[in-house]
Length: 201
Ligand code: GRF
Image (tube, rainbow, N blue to C red; front, side, top):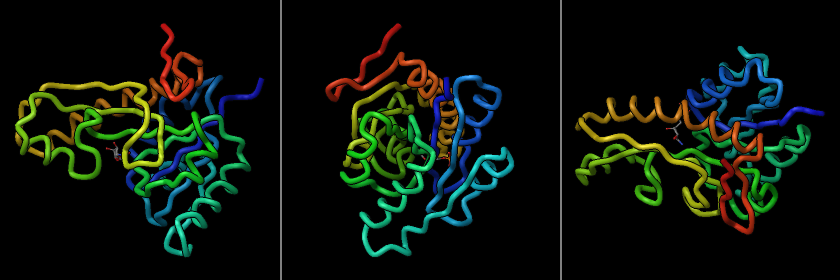
């Protein structure tokens, strides 16, 4: 049987990508088939090249509309027949065109306990609101900002007002949670049915 192909979309540093690369490097089930970035200088592209994973740079600025950019992404992704598309710090909102094409196969990780704090600057907003807890969410993607059915969350108690420290805590959680969820989707422990997330023990 063929492997479960995972495509990863990034825009930047790619520490979550690295966690996925490390987790699945010798997996007999999961294969990271390609990494696509909309930013040429994204460090994540280098991480992928170091792991001998195919990389692609698709510049959103070179396209006249969001749809044209997404059509290019789809053509590129289709070559790999991905079973799952993982957004890992991919800084573009995806329209219905893309979301419908990969329904149930598209996930994102967000640094907040969604539905709280969608969008940017989540750590700063958590501190300002004096939240007791902060955390990360992995969710299937719909065509709204950080929206879609939630697969999993993990949280921690906020004990600092320092954004950098919160970011560090968040990354630690993300690097555990994202590979775990990808594995659960690949082994069909988590899936989407009629718009709801089903989790099997
Ligand atoms: C992560 O915090 C993720 O939750 C958010 O963007 C950040 C990407 O970090 N969507 P990295 O590029 O994986 O290091």
